[in-house]
Image 1 (cartoon, rainbow, N blue to C red):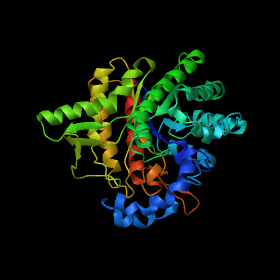
Image 2 (cartoon, rainbow, N blue to C red):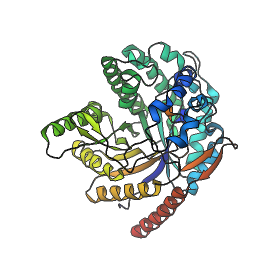
Image 3 (cartoon, rainbow, N blue to C red):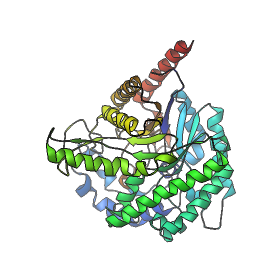
Image 4 (tube, rainbow, N blue to C red):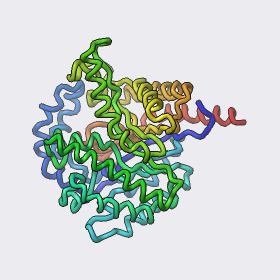
Length: 421
């Protein structure tokens, strides 16, 4: 690998770990938890681990974020764990609903909390990658129509202006938006997430408005900090045809790749200093129907193909030839830690291969540092390098795969230092 500094780190999102949030998602949780529990068998019984997760998935409590994993109060403890894992970067979200709980109210104590949060990372020589928005919004903003209405971008603009002034002085990397494609489709086309709309045209409008929101944020931040490195965290899928050299499969895959992976990124290409993306799985399509591949799969049933990140890196290089790349999320739901070490090892090999092809990969952030609230699935999926026992004082226990990775990164750092010397 290159001898220049490389960001090895982990990611979290505020709503999934902080606890005691009040936003549009917590309101939806209260309304939907009972139905989510009733429908669990229908939605999840095909999973290999259904018998094991059944009692949790059929409990309404599973679908309430509640206390989270108390990261808001225990962040220093969690940062110490980051150091133990030999990581040098950390991606986190600031919670808009905490900072601006009402349209005309700004919580200065919360702003001071995030200032301390950033300073604690800096004091440990951990690079903070600040994510502005990860799907949750204040209730008042949601009641106005959220990102569905272009005129509402003025509220997001005011928020970005405030945090740019208050929080960005000690930051070098900003991620404006997380997975706008996932949010637009799941919330406004499939109706699986709040506000549970089912209209493809509304979904497209939200998607386009989020591109505008990114550009608005870019201009505000660059005006005050022209050297700031700004990007997004787009969700990319390694989409492949089920039948090689089949005309229909090849055409459908090209369409799906463009619509899901590239349409939005193309529209903000001049407003990115780096290409950030999240990768979790490879999908195979027969025509426009996704086909089942088999094993190995994660606890969520996602086909595990860590090397599938390589063709995405190659395509980004070809599509955006002058942009460095940061892998902003990458991981798997793996409660028993069966595949995580293999996943990390294969992903590191894929990154090394990409760099040997002169692809400028500058960082890898694993999802997630901690077991967390996995949105509509609730608490049972376990993505963390660190397990959290929410029944026993939120006890943190580093998984074996994470300890293995820490040793690998220690050796990597030693080899890099010797190469420089």
